[in-house]
Image (spheres, rainbow, N blue to C red):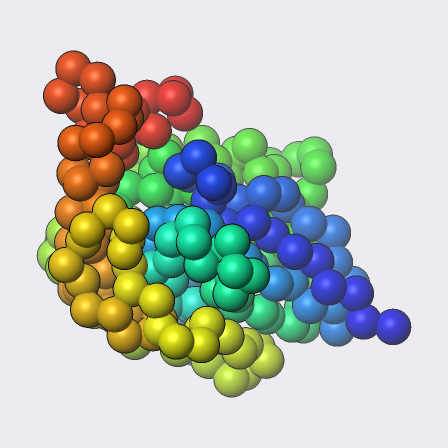
Length: 226
Ligand SMILES: [Cu+2]
């Protein structure tokens, strides 16, 4: 029987986490990522370069997965129209992944399937490597182009049995916060989704307590993870 392991991507309070950040899965099992606000992604990486797509490091990698960006908001979850992305586990070797939004990878938004509990390649070691990464890249994004300028292709490769399930109706990113993104259904391109996150953060800070001392939401989130 095929087991499905659910991983929460982000959290209702905006946390930059995958939860759980390491699942034990058997060959053939499914791993379903469920996306929380505001706009995250799941990108496969190597252990050694946590914030770089695996195909940048291993050009012959044909089964790399990338969910695309998944702009969503709380009301979408309330109506159970949760954005999901599901992959199939192809072997028992560790699979490493991260969120390519802004500096989420460096902020600790990394995870694994079948990471070892001990030794050199543990989840905590992976997280430490991510924290010191110089860039956070989406697939297709040129190194050195900056974290806001990517153009992800928004599709997982079929090789790993990936499928994404955009919610019906195509909810716009940050609709509750007045962001002016287009309301097309996910996966959005990084070039539009990255500014969306920035604008929703700014909008929400204007009417909530998320912006103390002029810090942005992202800065506060980063500090909280220190
Ligand atoms: Cu993220």
